[in-house]
Every structure is written in C-alpha cells, then in structure tokens.
Length: 113
Image 1 (tube, rainbow, N blue to C red):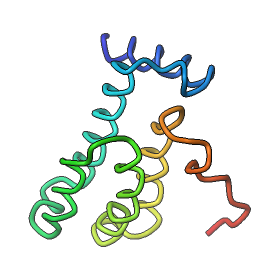
Image 2 (cartoon, helix red, strand yellow):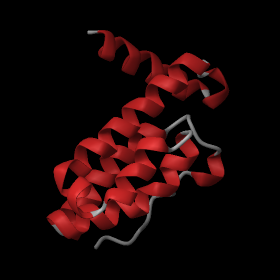
Image 3 (cartoon, rainbow, N blue to C red):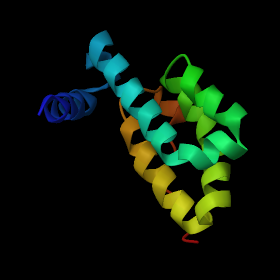
Image 4 (cartoon, rainbow, N blue to C red):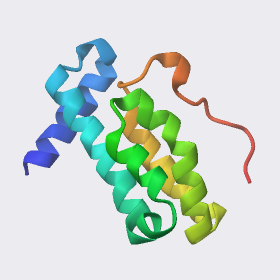
C-alpha cells in the first residue's frame, strides 16, 4: 500500500512539473527505476553482463540511469529479442517522467517497427 501511495503522489507531482517533486520522492522513484532495471537484467545480466549490472546498481541519479537504458536494452535484446526488450524499456522509461530535464525525455516517434 505504501508503494501505491508513493506512486500516486509521484504521478500527481509529475503532472505539476519536476520542480514539485520533493527530494524524498525523487530518491524513491530513482530507486524504483533502479530496481526495475535490475529485476529485468536478473541472473542473465549478472552472469553475462556484470559491468552493466554494476553501472545500474551504482548510478548516482535519474539522469545516469536514463543514459544506461541503451545498455540495458542491449542486454534485454540478447535475452528476449528486440521487440520484447523494447516493450520492457518503454515500461521502465515511463517512470522517468518528472525526474529529468525536458530535453532528455524522448519524443514519440512516428516510426512503428
């Protein structure tokens, strides 16, 4: 239930803009993103790509995790194939809303692969 409250509060604050996110909520959301990435990498990532797992584990902030997404995508692509990996990364990417400068957020693409 605490997780749900945090998610709802984060979502509402994200609608108001990133300046409305308190440091505590920001830290919680960064940790949720980190854990989502680590969960997706799982034992496969630990066994075959330990440096990428370490980069996720020790990333300092949301911006660092944002830039690691491409590496996580490559691991997930090796494990699941590109289509499933892209779906998993898109799901993780939604959690960055309100945590990054607007210039870093990807814009929707008209390309449908």
